[in-house]
Length: 189
Image (cartoon, rainbow, N blue to C red; front, side, top):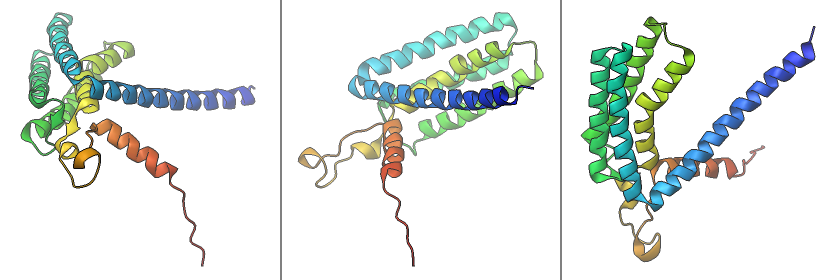
């Protein structure tokens, strides 16, 4: 038996997944930097992406996907686009943002359970549909939105007493990196 090769295959698979996750995180970080630098172009890109995905969703009706599920996803995309009115700023407690979060989760589970019941689709088709039609626009909004609190003036921080604006993804990434870089103190009595 190939015990060593089996162990190496498992280690390789784990390393591949870790490198994939790290590459995705780095890509999202670069994308969030681009959005921070060019918010007008990012707004247009998200808007046109949502419209193109709406057209694709309508075309999926010819493949026999559920009409009411497609209609709910189209309505969710409409709500997502409402976040673009104040783009890149967002009120984390605002009704549009909270509704967008709820619709993202419910839309995911709605399609997940649909594809569990209808097994005639390949794994690649389901993953592509979920990535492009369900997750792409909410993920683009998540990477690019800036909480209003991050742009409020504060006394003494930054230039001229103004706090620098940073989007949500970069702030979370910076917090994660900062907390892992801090030395761990060992308290020995």
